[in-house]
Amino acid sequence: MTRLRYVCLGLISAALGSASGLLLAGGSAVALTAEQAQGPGTRDETVRSEVGNLLQAAQELIRANRYKEALAKIEETERVRDKTPYELYVIDRLRGAAAAGAGDTEVAIRSFESAIASGRLSQTETLQIMEALATLQYRNKNYADAIAWALRYGKEGGTGDKMNRLLIQAYYLNNDFPNAERELRSELQADERSGRVPAEDRLQLLANCYLKQADTPGHIATLEQLVTYYPKKEYWAELVYRIETRAGFAPRLGLDAYRLKLALGIPITAGQFVEATELALQAGFPAEAKSFIDRGFAAGVLGSGADAERQRRLRDLATKGAADDQKTLAQDEAEASAAKDGTALVDTGFAYVVGGQLDRGIDLMERGIRKGGLKHPDDAALHLGIAYLIGGHKEQAIRTFNSVRGADGCGDLARVWAIYAHRLA
Image: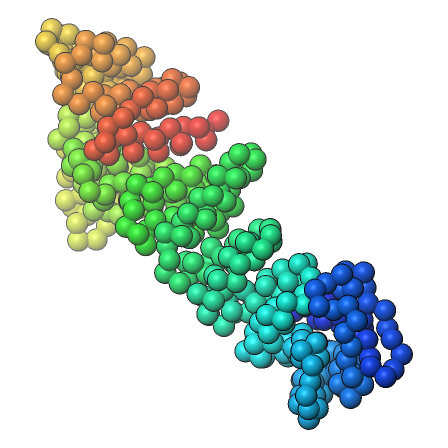
């Protein structure tokens, strides 16, 4: 059953309750409910029998779900002249319920707006009909009117998630992304304060609000929330893509983006496997390059097609480079220890790590960072965090990732690594 159907049923019930409380002039009186008797303008007002009899017949048709017939019966009241304001109010209210049931939203909207304008509704009834008007306007794609009624509903004391969700959706569909974003952030902050996990669809909508406003930092931050609570591959892929394509992302971090993609299991193309391998070779990590291209061949992405021979030559180059690197690592370590700054120690240590000598490599990287003089200290911390994670030191890895503050994309990558690390057993 749709949300609109629920609203209509509630209004029909309310309208029937009101009709059953009519005071018929010249006939037997039916007692009003306590709330209706206290409502503005209802005490001592009556409906003449020529109007009341038609409305009671319409009421029975509504109860039987014969809404179009009920509308026709209500229209017969047009023959009655000089109707009182109270009679007009009761007609509008019952017509609105019948029209809503019949799916005639335009008539329902006009009728309910007139009923509210009469000033005869109690607060509870007013809020109920305002909720219906917001829903009907939304269904008719009159988003500005839906927003107006939803806002008025809140100002009149209405509460609840249903109207707030409709308001946000109406803002979004009306291209009012700043207001949709504001309301969504308020909703999600309330979830956070209450310890509730934010709903996936709400985070998706917030991410889209930021995207529509070209707010890359907000979009990335929301994607980070999505992968934290809903770690789907498409969210991971979107997050890394947004990071590496945002303005100011340093080209030197391209290899780090590939490291993250491969760790997350994000599918990459044959060309990307080749590029990652070449970047690792250029950075001086042939063992890592061999690991990359071997994964490409194992996945069946490499080794076939027009570029198969070139890919095999690249694999041979990486394999030979990794073997040669193992022979010179000790010499590289000695030279790095004698260097004035810690850059070579960090790089040599990382080469040990990707070559499988974890403890020795981590020790060298830590020594290099303590030695200082690094051109890119955040890069070094990022790589140390990766080394800790490869070595099974999860908590140290997370602390190290959280220490990275680089505004050139390094900090963004580190945050994603930290989220990923949190999810590991």
